[in-house]
Length: 309
Image (cartoon, rainbow, N blue to C red; front, top):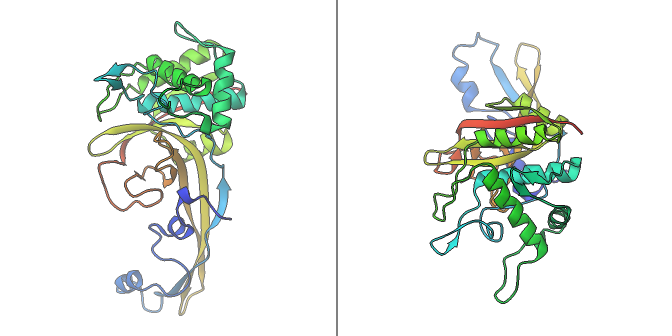
């Protein structure tokens, strides 16, 4: 099976931190530890069978929205330009649009802001035909699909209390307000329940994405900043490892690696499958090798939920 380019080459996804690959005798590690193995019990070789995909959800979100134009066209203007839409509103908007269109969870009021069916129809067209959402060319007006998406993102920003800015610091919003927004949607009968803000395990990630088919909000910090995005894909790969000895029976065990797909809200840039809690975007998907300014590797939080369907 050939994976999308954004997942990186098969060799990379199978070989990160594996301690070896392919078939043949592994050198360094065996030499290093044979001093404390009883004589005759050290391995004479380790064979790695090919990685096999055991579980894969597919990528849930079709949207690849971001914080700049045209998505921020209806955000406040500061220093002569529209403020960034904010990573939190963009993440929330993509999640709620997915649930609205796939599970019939449209809503028509958020606080004192009214939404209508025409807006949802235009958003659906924008999701189906993403090329319709585009920057305005001089002399032209904004089309209905672009306006609907920009309007919805702006309303999500208001709902989560974003603090708008036009500089590189972005437009932040508290994650706790995402919880409040989902609770509100549950209170008005949209089926959102058991909403929780906490660090989570790979088992919970699997449950949300692979079992329930629900994208969810995730956030983390780097050495210099924080970011919020969407987790919307699950991939489990396994391979059998065969350890051969000179005077002992051959042993077999299975190695497994779990990957999650991240939609970072950067218009598709850096989206891909990452080792869970190693979202090293400066290196790209599935390549946890160094810590950089945009390598999100600590203080993770997730907003999980149930959704009646």
